[in-house]
Amino acid sequence: MPEMILVETHGAVGVIRLNRPAALNALCDLLVGEIGSQLVDFNANPDIGCIILTGSEKAFAAGADIKEMQSRTYPAVLHDDFIAKWETVLRVKKPVIAAVAGFALGGGCELAMMCDMIICADTAKFGQPEINLGVMPGAGGTQRFTRAVGKSKAMDMCLTGRMMDAAEAERSNLVSRVFPAGTMMEEALKIAAKIASQSQTASLLTKKSINAAFETTLTQGIATERALFLSLFGTADQKEGMAAFVEKRTPSFAKPA
Ligand code: DAK
Image 1 (cartoon, helix red, strand yellow):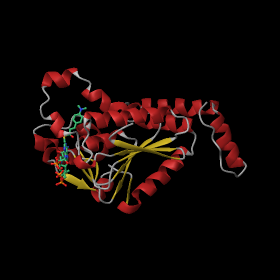
Image 2: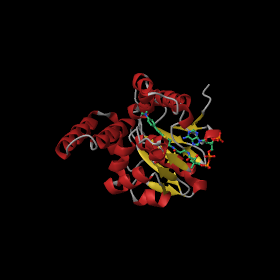
Image 3: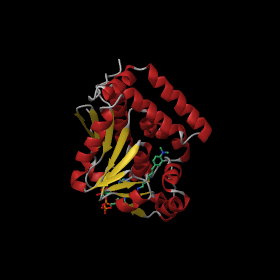
Image 4: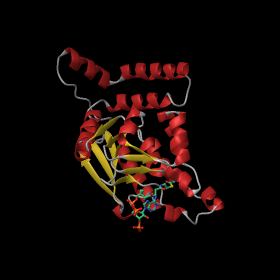
């Protein structure tokens, strides 16, 4: 049984809730490992079509665990698998939504940015405050933040270590939508249920194609998209989706066999 996360399923939606309240969900090795194992389980479960990663009202996660990192040495971090465990979320094929309330700082913000989209409560506070600790972001903060919000704001955030509120995060395209704190989870579940009701194959390939946009040229990206789009004509889901439109009914997509 995991100690630092709570796991729920709501129909075809899997929810992982970080649950280390005494440390504002600071991401210690155990917590990162438990998140990763549960992501792997949900990813392998054909009944799950979308995953939500969330925290508490006060914190999504206030960063990597500073107390745990404090005494680490360069050779130790170089040799252990400190980095690998953090990136399990990048290997999940199903859509993953980060639903953020309260603090998403340092590694917490980086973990949210590794997800496929971020929605947040109006209480959310994002930041990369590593500079205040004499270090810098190390799990994508200088890269994903810059791609999301642009150079000037990324420099501002990473060099001053200041926090950004939900309104600024929405204005800056760090998050896709902001909800009042009391309704955020309900809204997250609605978004996830909608995604989970679609063809799992189409959403897997859509995610793959959008992610390709960050790794390649426009011409190559378009070629990737075209090949993936054409491949969907070999699926039962394409037949079902288009038949349902013509027959004026809701499509019913089968779970991947
Ligand atoms: N680590 C450990 N404990 C933390 C923590 C953290 N990041 N954040 C909060 N806590 C603990 C506090 O120490 C306190 O514990 P006690 O003293 O009660 O035992 C408890 O949570 C409540 O915190 P506060 O008393 O400070 O609460 P406040 O509401 O007053 O302030 C705060 C909330 C979020 C503003 C403040 O706690 C804060 O500034 N926290 C630190 C935020 C921060 O600097 N985050 C960045 C950490 S560095 C990598 C992966 C990841 C990373 C790097 C590399 N690789 C895989 C290569 C990431 C690095 C980071 O995230």
